[in-house]
Length: 133
Image 1 (cartoon, rainbow, N blue to C red):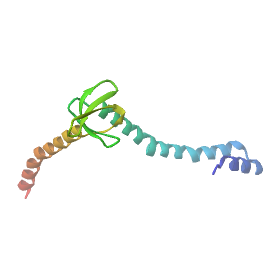
Image 2: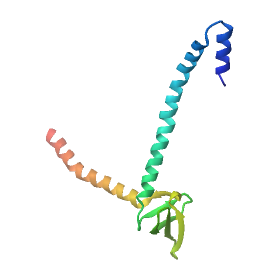
Image 3: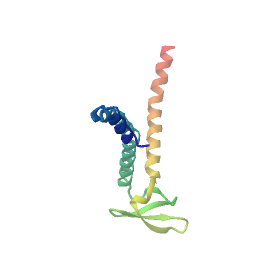
Image 4: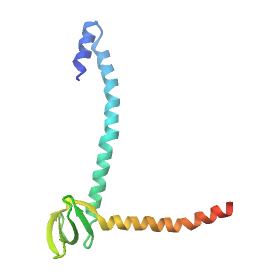
């Protein structure tokens, strides 16, 4: 519902100035735009940035998943395209980098690094808790 004509009509009918109506409308809409920006625009830009970084980090030998669900191994790449090898007969497909949904190899590396970090941090914490007991 558009409140602008309603607010202006009420201000004119009551003999009040339109600046007070505009001010109240401004007070109403500025927080709405701020909420919209912080809940929708910023997270979307963050996701786009992460996807761009993921696509730029693809290298030969990485296993990827396309937006169509095709899983393949990168065998060649140019600025905006990839050639992937997929299937038992090693079929080659040429795809655009923008069609990549996920870099499986990079995800596995991050998971392995997280496990290694937990493994390295784990004994120190358990020894401290035993000493405190």
